[in-house]
Image 1 (cartoon, rainbow, N blue to C red):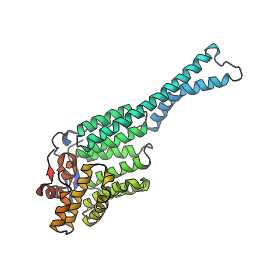
Image 2: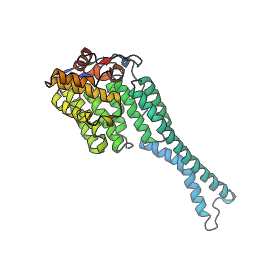
Image 3: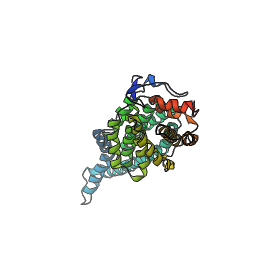
Image 4: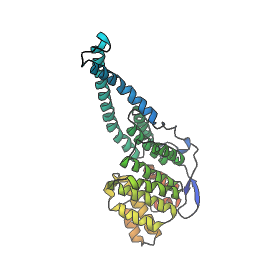
Length: 311
């Protein structure tokens, strides 16, 4: 995708989303390679047919032998045995694949949290390649690729990946809510708060209570994009009380820095703002640079106060 997207100004109107990668990350302007297409219902059905038809056929032949009949003559025992072996092989392969994906996923997430989008993209693509036969895992990894695109400033790419993935039936409940909250933040960074509000509402409709903190984070991003700093401050205050639910030091620090920014915008004293910033420092540009590039006033605020570190 082209290296220019549109992001919201913190005050009013809009401005170009500024490319500028942190050290060790891929340049946003280079564009992300096309993401794998989501698994369609037809493809999922084809995989099921391939996996279970031999075993089903063997079971049918085995049933025919109950009355002393040998549907395919002397080959009947061999067909039944091969069908049983095929079913065991498929079941074992499916179990092994899901176990591998379950182990690989945390490493991809760790790279994403660390701001190493090159390693995160490679890991996500590897999992996507291996899990087309497991559509729920595949869809979750597409959401991870959307986060990589968002970090690089490729907001239109991130939006396209998320919307195409959400159009499939494979993610429900928490998984679907997580992607909808990510889409809300993408809309916030791109200056589309109205669309982001719709995604946020859709996420809230299916999210369990334990994801309430991420709903508040996405809501704060949208409020900042709209210039509603009092609303954003209230949501970020709620986030600070459940910071452990974010499960990421970088996310917690970003929330505190945004909280300090909103506090300054809503007339808090310098001492109050400084106390909030103290818990946000240092803020790694490599991890949160996509927010800094989108929101120039916020970037100036944290840079001026020495909160941001390169790398």
